[in-house]
Every structure is written in structure tokens, then in C-alpha cells.
Length: 102
Image 1 (cartoon, rainbow, N blue to C red):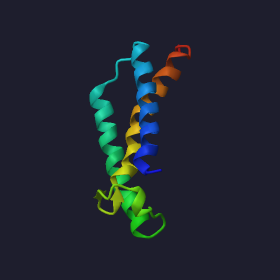
Image 2: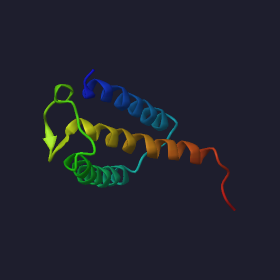
Image 3: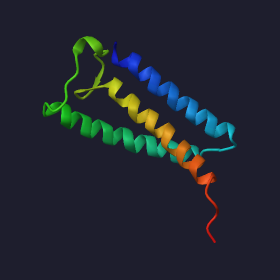
């Protein structure tokens, strides 16, 4: 199994959670979502390159596309995109189920 095939499941799940949140009348602040995504992608690029560069983590070359940002395979960034969709969706969903504070 390649990392892209594995990533498809995470990205589909993230898309479903995001879509359900929007169907429940959540209207995301797109600038906030894009800003947060940009920040976490930058942090992912920095720290993934560090842990791969120091030899802490490695990838089977036959299971990645070969496209890299620094030394980090682009497949590694799919989890960041999934998190950027899931976290605000779940946050909003859980926030709607709690009573308003006085």
C-alpha cells in the first residue's frame, strides 16, 4: 500500500467531517481556515524536514511518489490538511452542544 492510498482515507474522512459540519449550518471563516492551514503546513515542513533529515523517520522509496519538499515527501502533508479540516469542524460541532456561558 502506498502512502497516497492511505492518505485518501484520511482526506475522505476529513472531507466528510467538514461537509457534515457545514451541512449543520456551520459557515467557516475561510480566512481563518486558510491562515491556520498555512501556519500548520509551514510547521509541518520545518519539523518533518528536521526529523527526516536527522534520520529519526524514514520512508520506503517504493511507497512514496518521490516528490519532496526539502527531504519530506509531499504525502506527509496530507495529514496536516486533514487536521486543518477536522479540527475546526469538530470544535464547532462540540461548541454547539454546550450551553452558552452567562
